[in-house]
Length: 194
Image 1 (cartoon, rainbow, N blue to C red):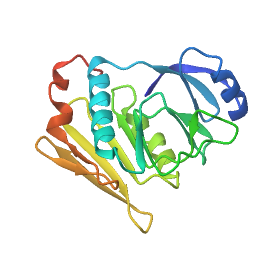
Image 2 (image 1 turned 90 degrees about the vertical axis):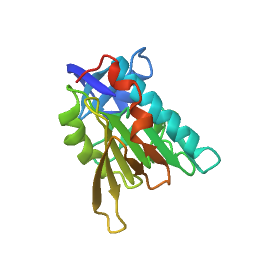
Image 3 (image 1 turned 180 degrees about the vertical axis):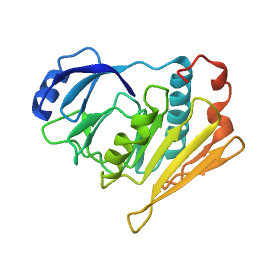
Image 4 (image 1 turned 135 degrees about the horizontal axis):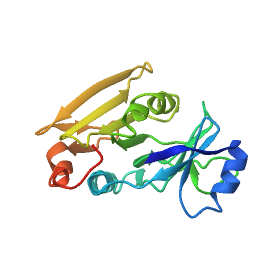
C-alpha cells in the first residue's frame, strides 16, 4: 500500500495507534511521521487480488494464512506501522502488544510497485522488512511488465535474490508457487501507476 504526499503529523507509536483507530482512512507511521495511505490503480488492485487469491488457495489447509492490504504490520526495529499489499503468517497470529489489529509475525510480504513507491519499497521499506525476525520472503511485483522479484532469507540470515519474468514460476519458502503468467493475465491492459 502506498503513502501519499507529505506527512500529516508526528506521533509516537502509542499516539498513532490510538488515533488510527478513530480514522475512516488508513494511515502508516513511518519514522514517527503519519502518512495517508493512497488507493491503488485498477492495475495495482488486480495484481494484488491475483496474488492474494493464489496465496489463499495455496495455503488452504496449512498452518499459514494470507491477509489483504487492510492488515497492519509492525516493524520493531523502526517502530513503523505499515500496510503491505499482501501478508502471510504461518502458525498463530502474534498481535502487537495492546492491539487487536496489528501483526508482529509476518512470514511473507508482497508489495506491488508503483512510480510513487518503488524507490521506498526497494530502499527504506526493504531495510525495515529485513529486520523482522519472522520474515522469510519479500516479493516485489512490477506494474510495468510481467515480473516478480523475490528476496528469500537463507539459513545464515543472508538474503537470496531472484527475478522471474513471463513464463516463469516463483516458489516461496512456504511452498507456494506463483506463476507469473497467471498473476499478470490481463492486468497490464488496465490503467496503472507506472
